[in-house]
Length: 200
Image 1 (spheres, rainbow, N blue to C red):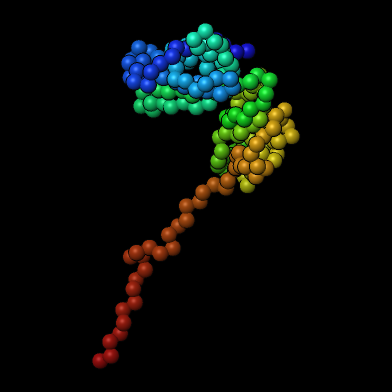
Image 2 (cartoon, rainbow, N blue to C red; image 1 turned 90 degrees about the vertical axis):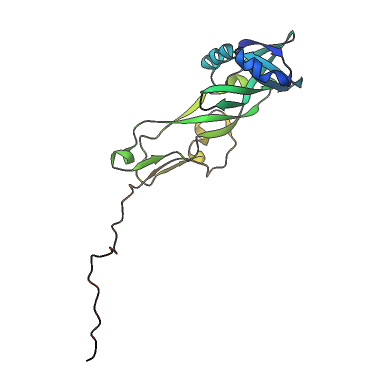
């Protein structure tokens, strides 16, 4: 289910003043839409993203025209924790598209309980899916993973209802052996140096 956001056209020079007044500079482009700069209310966008998720479909009303969009990219002010720019991709609701989806690891790994370390080399996968079926995230149960186990795309490809674009060996989780600190074998001053005997 998509949520409607009203957007307004903007000029590039207005970015600073827009942010001060609670708006986020953005751009919309894509299906049956000419690329154009817009601005959206920061609170409205934040509320919508909470409702539909990062990959959710949004209805964007611009200059009397309503289009379906997804947020394809965004920029954040890390210090303030605020979004400062957003890119909206207009989409055809009848056609599949490629999107990046977050991967969430759930469950307590057997290997971790034995002292192993759970690592997540890649936190997103790229999938091809219809806009109405875009998942907010993919949850992977790692509870059965032991030390030395690796979870790749190959092992989940047939368990989902959409096409995963990444290669089979794309790694999603690893349970590695615990790091053992190696003791120094050469310690300065711990061994007495041999003193050469002088011939008298």
